Length: 183
Image (cartoon, rainbow, N blue to C red; front, top):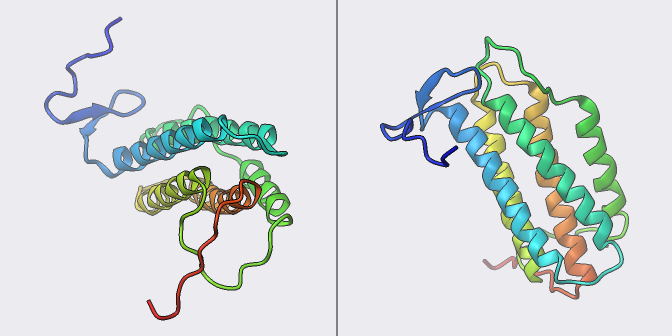
C-alpha cells in the first residue's frame, strides 16, 4: 500500500463512510486541528522524556491517553452527521480530565494574575498545544450535529494542558511570568 493515493490532489478529501468534501470543509478543519493538538502533545512528550521529575510517568501516561482520545474525537468529527459514529465520546472522558486537572492544580500556588505562556521548554510546548486545542474547540462549535461532549472535551483538554504546563514549570524550575499591568 502506498502512502500517497492522489485522491486529494484536486482539493477534496473523504470523510468516514466515503463522502467527498473540500479540504477546507469545517469538519476537515476541526479534525485536522485535533491532529495538530495531538502532534503538539507528541512534541511536548519528546521534551518530557528528556526530563526527570516525580510525576513524569503519570503525566506521560495521561498525555498518551489524551492523544488516543483526540484521535477518536477526530474520527467523530470526520463522520457525517447522518452516519453512525463507531466510537463515541462519553461524559466519563470529560470527568476523567476534570479529576486529573484537580489533582495537578492541588500542587500549585493559586493564580494571582494572568500568566504569559512561557517558562521551561516543556511548559512552553504544552501552552502551544493548549492554544491549538482552543482553536479545535472553536472550529468544532461550528460543525453541524457535533456531539456536545466533543466541545466539552476539547475545552477540558485545553484546561488540562494549562494546568500541567504550570505544574511542569514548577517541577522543572521554569519561570512563570505574570502579565504586566502596564502592557
